[in-house]
Image 1 (cartoon, rainbow, N blue to C red):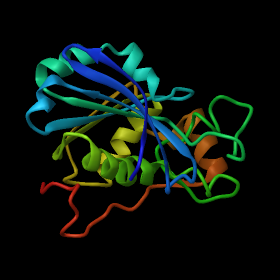
Image 2: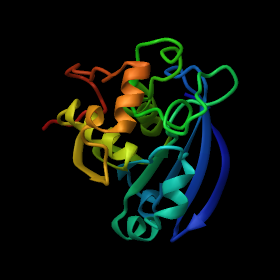
Image 3: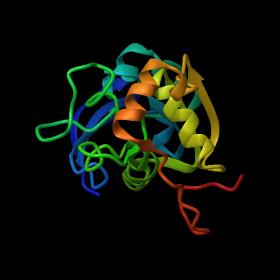
Length: 209
């Protein structure tokens, strides 16, 4: 699983990095950010997935939340994926709440979205394998959190993958997507459905409940 380092910066004794790789889930180049705490120099550390909201990118949480200080104290790795596939040839919409920047962390089933909008599989399966293979992460100690659309993603990914995450939290989440304008529009337009969890007994990324 090759990836490219776009930038790194010293941060509270650890490192804040920005990375890019070619995703087999989305069929596009995907960017993600990782904060690696100082404790990772000597041992694998727990991972917190941080999912951003509509129109955001992998930079939203890393720049605005100010979570690195506390993560450094706790020895916690922060992983911040982008919110959707992007690029020329990827389906989009003129409105901010549909298309690029509005992946809803689910897998699309309807054209023209289905070929690329597979953020459920990307965030829950593909990106964790990359993180587990290349970063000093304890993949048996994962938590997930998110804001707004990212809160929806955190809740749905955790609920459909029992035993995967040790914690789940959401800030101002979209909790009833078919009962609010954002969710009604997105889920009706692109027929998003949950990605099925891996239930293999030897799956290396899933902890026992």
